Length: 23
Image 1: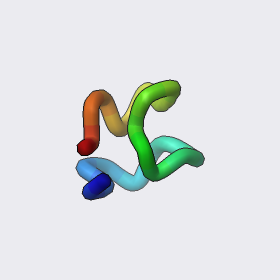
Image 2 (image 1 turned 45 degrees about the vertical axis):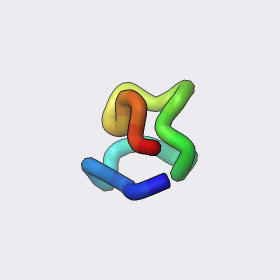
Image 3 (image 1 turned 180 degrees about the vertical axis):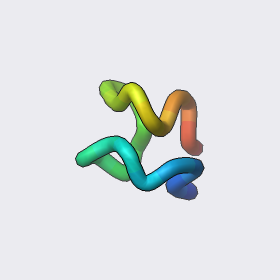
Image 4 (image 1 turned 180 degrees about the horizontal axis):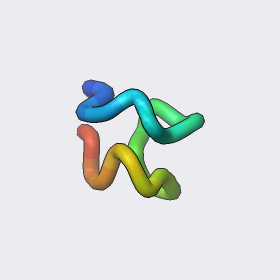
């Protein structure tokens, strides 16, 4: 998964407001 924005605590971007669908 690629971090779109450094806002979410998780890198998978599934439960993050910053990284939505960062696969």
